[in-house]
Image 1 (tube, rainbow, N blue to C red):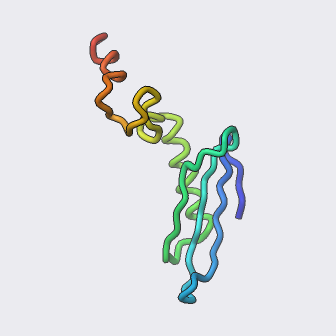
Image 2 (image 1 turned 60 degrees about the vertical axis):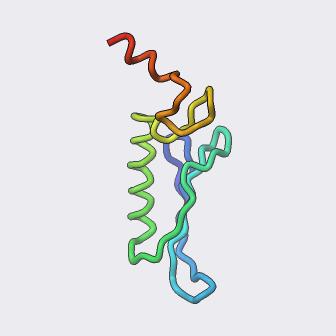
Length: 93
């Protein structure tokens, strides 16, 4: 099941793994630059529609809080980082 949502492509598929179990595999890729937002799998009874909805909610959260999902553009470390780039907001309070 492939869906485009807010500039991302969500692809969710149910396939058998090498051990023969039915697994859900999903990827969420930003269309603009191919950034893998999410790449995962689960041994679950959830449907592809359920995972697609969950990924849409996660994408919505990304637009509200991108700092929770992207590394710092200065030091390339996960937020909160030690380079102090986010400290500017604290100084203005």
